[in-house]
Amino acid sequence: MNLQKIVCALDLSEHSKTVAEYASSLAKATGASIVAVYAAPTLTQYTGFHVPPNTIDSFVGEIVTGAEKAMQQFVTENFEGVEAKAEVVVGYAAEEIISIAEKEGADMIIMGTHGRKGIDRILFGSVAEKVVKNSPVPVLTIRPSGNYTGGPAYKD
Image (cartoon, rainbow, N blue to C red):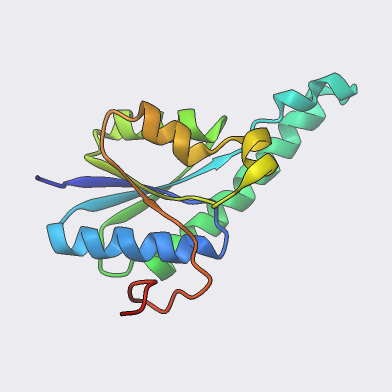
């Protein structure tokens, strides 16, 4: 296995730091570079609420500008010693993550899962699940763990 480029999908939640640690460790071990991706939600689903399209466009623009600043800061703080760049895209997260992986010629995608259960899972589906099912490259998913201390989440 020759890892040269890793797409690291982030949602900028607390869990993103853990996902970044895995991506960073793997990149350091293999010499790979990282493309950190944040997918801002598309607001086209709100057009039925009689909001003028120019208002939606400017709102999306503000979200993207804020996300770009946040991602730049996140990459600087969490990918030290690794060649990494930040990308902010607008759209449906699973599709955008796969699209970036294909465009960048990535060898792997690393992303978090939200560990949703029950009705939440049925209503929202899982971005990670969609990426795993449709990705042309291997996907490493990192589940959030309440007891994460930097090592395995299990005890001997």
